Length: 289
Image (cartoon, rainbow, N blue to C red; front, side, top):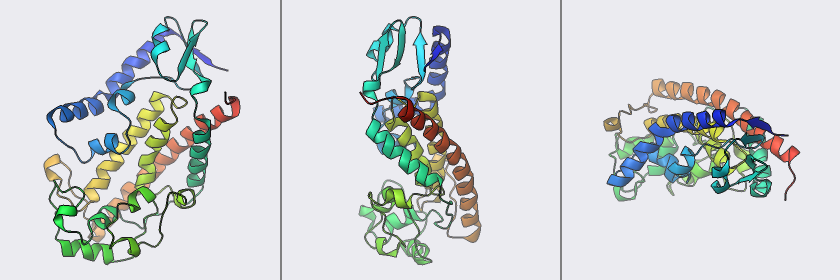
C-alpha cells in the first residue's frame, strides 16, 4: 500500500533536498575540478563510492507513489511510471542484499556499545611505517614516530571493524585483540564503533531505491560528523583545515573522544532503527519479481 504524494509536495521536497546537500556536493565538485583533496569530505565520496549526483538526486523510496506530471521519473533508475504515478519498481529492489543488510543492522543493534578503542585505528595504520608508505602522506604527522608507537603499544588494540582493521600496518595487526574479517563482520560489528556508524550511510545508499533520499542524507550528515572526529583523533596535523586535534595520547583527549563516541552511538542507534524499519517493511510487503 503506497502513500500518494502530490506533485507540489514532492517538487518542494526535491528543492529542499537539493539545498540541503549543496554544501556537501558543490565543494567536492570544485575540488575535483582543481585536483585538490580533502581527507575528511572526499573520503565520504571516494570510499563509499556514491557519486555526488546520486546523493543530490531526491527520490521518495519505497511506499510512496508520486502523482501529477511524473514523466521525468521514467528516466530515474529504480522507478516505474504507470497510471499517472511514479513509484519504486519492484524489479529494481535488491532483495538478497536487503536481507543481509537487515541482519547486520539487527545484530549490531543488539550489542552493547564498546568504548575502549580510543580511536587508535588511524595510529595503527601508520604504526612503524616509513613516511612514503603512510596513507595520508600529503599531510604531516603531528607527533613523532616513536610517540605513535607508544600510543599503539600502550594497551591492546580493540578494533572490531574489518574495513578499519584491514588498513592496519603489518606490525599493528597482531596487536589487535580480534582479527576481523568480512565473514566475521556480523559477529563483531558493535554500535560504539565510529566506522559502523559511518557505514549506516553505506547501507542506506546500497538499499536504493528502497531507502529514500531523505534518510540517506541523514546518514550522510552523521557520517560526515563522525569522519571529522575520526580524523581529529588521527596523528596527522590537519589544523590548516580547521580541524583541531583530539589528543588521545592524553587522558583528557581519550575522555573527549569517548564523549563523542557515545553521542554518535546514540544518534546512530536511531538511524539504524529507521533503516531497519524501512528495509523490514519492504521485505515483508513486497515479493521478489
